Length: 238
Image (cartoon, rainbow, N blue to C red; front, side, top):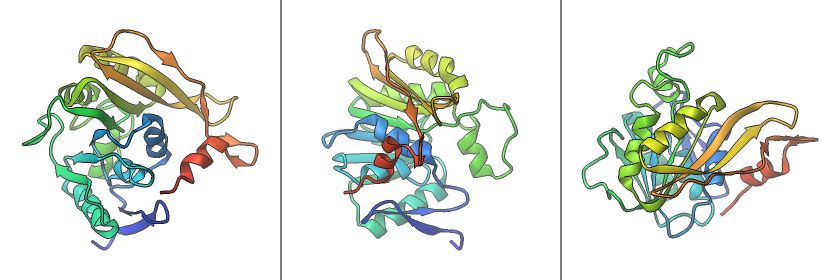
């Protein structure tokens, strides 16, 4: 399509983006937070343009990543990226996460990731563009749907890693616990030490016992622009 264009993520990885399906800093932060491993079986729910799987592809990628989205254009963009980069271990699937998909490896995934819609349905001003409304508002799925699907996909001890806005923290923790996923790690993201958090990153484990570690805050800004930690994330290469 005319509005598709490619953007470089690393020396060898490019991603197809459009006005409807793009990415932001939160995708980099979430990918980094997951601490994914080469032997992980990963499912990325609501993958959009596939930014999280493609970021994983930059450096010691997992053995297999399923990238799920209900929107056909998102899957089309990811397919174009995979063809351009000659990647065969990421499988794009157009499906509703509430129903999963035929042949889904239920109970076998070691890691599920999701950058979900941040705003509850009818909360705030909704974007006019349908794709953006779906990405930003809980129109086609809510946080409980994400946690329910993740619980079905994860093996015992498997991890769910998601990000969201601080005002949704209570909703996220409640949804995790309702679906047998115990919150284990939490990290807040701030611009600098004087600013409030604008994002949180959380990891839950299926079937785990209660105990959550709150990690040091992540600062995105330093004295001369991006913080050292954010520069590290942006600069990761194969």
